[in-house]
Image (tube, rainbow, N blue to C red; front, side, top):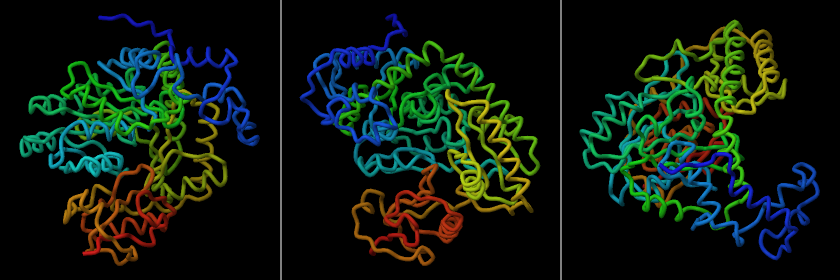
Length: 488
């Protein structure tokens, strides 16, 4: 096996060398290495970053046809993450997930995926004209969020759809839970199908034994990772990994990546991937060790607050929740009488503390390599103050995504996407056919998809979310006063 020196950062080093050479810049971007950047932006960022904001110049390689320093950086990434081949992505894990859909099958094929998949996969279905076979995820009792899909559901799905072109799993979910990916991989592989992992929130898994097993190590054929989420790179920078011996054709995946990759990728983002990979490869265990210590203290502090419940090891059932990421702190606030949306808004308005996401019952905090123990203590004190000042009678149980009946599909996703639509008030949409996708964001899981009948349960859920101040992605009306339905 070829040896790799993980102390290298070939792309970062090439860019640094270019910046130090005082080049004559007669190429895009037009700010000339920072000279033309607006002053107020320059005040925030400092000038250094713009010196490496360049284009495909001699010696700096080409992301869409890498043969030099980018190719070398991707090889180092594959070695660090245990992959057979890795791709740098300038378009987020969204790009990687959509490339996997495009590379898996052909128009008219079917693909098996959890209903709580990210909306980017839905975009891949529209692009590819591949039809979904949705699996119902389990719901974590009390916390009322969707977790993994039970293994038996995957087993049933591959037996009922033996011609499916691929199978998706989420490893981990936005809430940090992990299903039994190893067993799912065994079932899917036996059926001759590739297992594709949305590992957007799990790029750190392979760097500490106390964290869940990474998707590739668990048997997935491919994994899309948002390195910026928990790996230390800049927002939007991501990677797509193929396992050694993947059932996917690497060249077809590469072609799909190029198809949807921007022709003007940010070298700043690419350099951050190279640097983050080097940091994880050299110091990943120590960084994760410290992160787990900080997150453990935060969990202990939050658990002492009356009315607050923290998701933890006691909620693992070995099936629907096979494992979980201890650096993802999920706090149930509904026991204090407050929705997660209300708690998140209160923390931001009163303490300037911003959590990653909220739903009806919970708030979710993401801790990464930059987590600080002092900030975590401040968070715990703020939540204690919230419970004391605003808390009341626990909220009654509510319907969540997992409680909805299976949607009635009237028209295929791609056909519905291109159909004529009209707006109707959300309150009057029940019984009509959705002409757009609607997701409460975050986490961005579609509640409605184009071509599905709008149920009364979904209408009630969306109205409750809207009135609680939730944000939406997908609908033409971001306030969700109206939903666009098919004009049929």
